[in-house]
Length: 265
Image 1 (cartoon, rainbow, N blue to C red):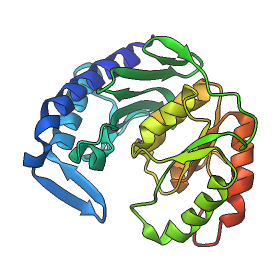
Image 2 (image 1 turned 120 degrees about the vertical axis):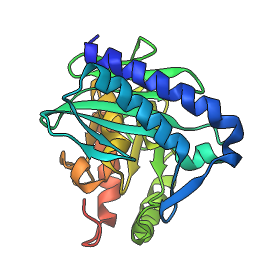
Image 3 (image 1 turned 45 degrees about the horizontal axis):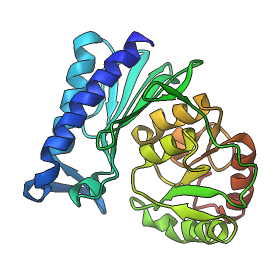
Image 4 (image 1 turned 90 degrees about the horizontal axis):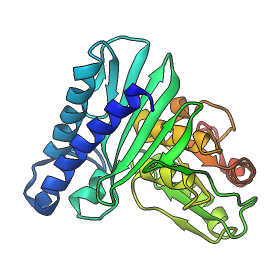
């Protein structure tokens, strides 16, 4: 295991302890609204501070891109951090949230993790080294088409101008699959694709910290991740589709007819 991933795991566990400590008293937390349906609490900030402290203690010169504190520093090596993916779930006591940490070198993902502190599940990946769940090798499911597939997704809550397009996509897929699931933590949703719990995933309007680690988990688990056009610009467009090669292709064929000029692929 790379030293960088070891430190990231230590940072994620430190943040996880903070999330669990406050979970039973979330109703007492001060909450701010960053934008419509996008919330932040002091727990998000405390978890992010704990992660950055751990990373800085070992790698003080690395740059950081974090959800709450933004971009910090300039370096070829950059940590991409979501200290609490699924904040709305967390604030309601809904048990589906995670911590996402990834490291990229000149834009290329090198290692990453998604940590579910409630279930003590640590999903990790290293470029060229495969993906693991609690040190057990994982792979994407081998389903070859939409029939019988279980697909994860997330509603476009940040930009509701995309809602009509999304609902048309939702309708197409719900009619052609075994079912759709929207648990509310994109990072964890992507990790579930990587380990075969779901067959595929798509979402519109994500941010880099939502999907950096999860995208690496899928590719190192033998899957494919692109934007809706099938290109590698998902970090630029915010739109992501993931699954094994055949299932991914089937998802693109189902989703692309619903694209319009107002929705970048």
